[in-house]
Length: 246
Image (cartoon, helix red, strand yellow):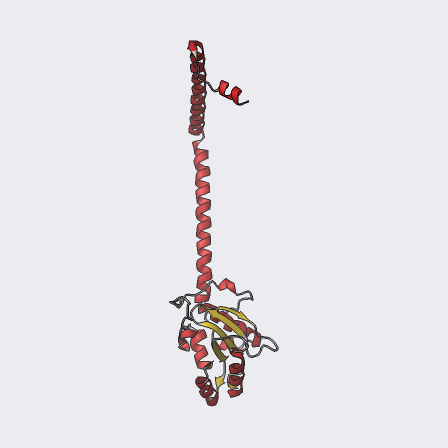
């Protein structure tokens, strides 16, 4: 088989074979020229159709890019613009209040989820931040004149770190926090958000880490530098339903 292939690929010999090769090459060149001419003629005759198809494809690509960019900006703007009025918060039930706190954390750049249920061991919302660490919120939705006392602080202190692995523990209420509870919490690193702080957080948009003066964690040995500055994450990480302001 190899010998036969080499025989077919040998160079033309003699005037007869050279003439035959030249005629074949001329025929091939003629066919290519005719095909090129026909293609150019067809393009010239149908260029409006071809131009329209190309324009349609370009418009389609542009529209998809614009829509994708608009959707991304809308997803980013929704949490950044989230504001909840205190009157609206007062009208929520316990579950809705926990969802509202979850959404406020997401707005501030946390990856957060609602976990509150029976036997939750003083954790209604748990969040994670690349620079601040893990946070646990204990939600206490009450009447406007309701007060949160020291026993709540004791419970949160006992479970936030040992049970939930939290770096930050916060009690949040739409009511007030007693003086003794505030003092004990300040002494034992249990933060608190009472009605006035909740107004700043929910209504005025002050980020929780700014409101409570939370410091970035020190990197552990062998760990890289702490991520800064604070950057909001994609709100779509939370799986539960979103809560909007009434």
